[in-house]
Image (tube, rainbow, N blue to C red; front, side, top):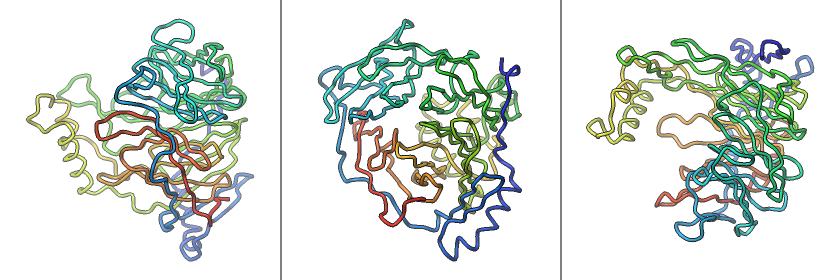
Length: 409
């Protein structure tokens, strides 16, 4: 069906152009520690040098909300928390993969209601995953195999199921739902042939699931066959993967091949390009060795019962390695309009997020720590998955403090 629709292609990565634009403002940025802004054919290009700036967003010492327990009543026991989002009244909706439910808790942590459950009927889930909240506190909870949405009201009433057309087993990248009910979904264009890079299609579907546009074609993954394991493929170590996020009236896309994010509006028009300087991306032998050592340790060693031929191939010398590290591994659009970019963490480095204001200027760095996986950013909070020392899953919310002297705009 895609080939019969108008394809709106956004050029995501043109290395010569990106490098040239960055070099143009690099000296100014490093001398003045400012943001370099240019305009090209009505598209604003904002370039900054966040790696030379020490501005940090800070999380409170203790969570201001914690939902989940080791034992007790069923609604507070989680098994594979998949996502969480905050509603306008301060309550929090949580997707639990074990029970296949969406559970809603008050702003102080009391269970209010649950919806969904295991099954294939109206409002039920095979494998719930992502959760988005649109204006009016309408909840879009995704399900896959095949990919679809169950839509609920703020009071937990099942509204409808939305099945994106054409049929797809699952989404490859986060995506999101816009304020007008358009869902932005990312699917693989073709089955991955050995040794070739696939394309990811960013598709826009109306509130009824009908395809309305192909927003962009982004570079996807490259899979290489393993010679002595027929039918087994591996991606190159440190391969870049495109990332997409959508919220309200904004779509953010990045190929992760270059340090930039492209910002589109709800009409799929390119409005802004946010770039940053990231000069030290070369992959060295030290990085590869650290990756291999950590992989082996994480699997319990080569002598462990679970070690397989696939594991050996994953750390073998014949597996390809990227020449440059990706620039990003995730994107989020905050509830306040800020863009959050998760920098690709090199081996044995702590994961870090960079925040950019609605106008594209750099705001701050944030290192949430290994035990916190962010689900949502607001103007003054971060909602996240938290793990305690026993591995118990909780949804936690921390107060988020941004630097007073930077507004990102």
